Image (cartoon, rainbow, N blue to C red; front, side):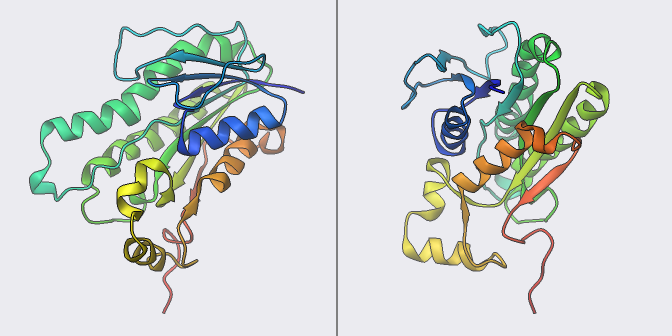
Length: 233
């Protein structure tokens, strides 16, 4: 059965792949992002401008939503001593507070669905201590706690799950992957010896949005090439 999905930040990278996956499955996707990017309005795809950092923003949503996916994120890597209050606040705004704002707007429509699903995003740096990740690890740690708390509060009618990514080949990560040397060094840090692919992430999100994961909630799925759980000797 076709679903109605709100995709926040669906104009590039992982969000673009999720949009394509869900449209390919016959779903109707409502995209909300600061920039349109390559999103083309059609019978099943609708775009509206939305800035997750602006508390005054509103969303034009259908009466019923079956899924909510929040893709906006940031990669701010600095030594702790160089992080300012503004750095911490920006990461919290984009990754956590913006998510809570968008979800509050969507929740009435999600509650009208027969079994809605919420998909959020975290980072491997929450479970695995990585240098220079103090700000983003804190913000995404808040997202993981938020996901578990919401999963408990919204059960049994709405499921909430989270995908925790390692470095993934997206436009946002281009500055970390813009040379063969950087790309190879990043790949070598993972037990699977490569970096993540945005299509693989979209497939995992599609699983969480679908009936196949109907008995799964409150989970954080690590999509990190084994980084969080394996140590090769």
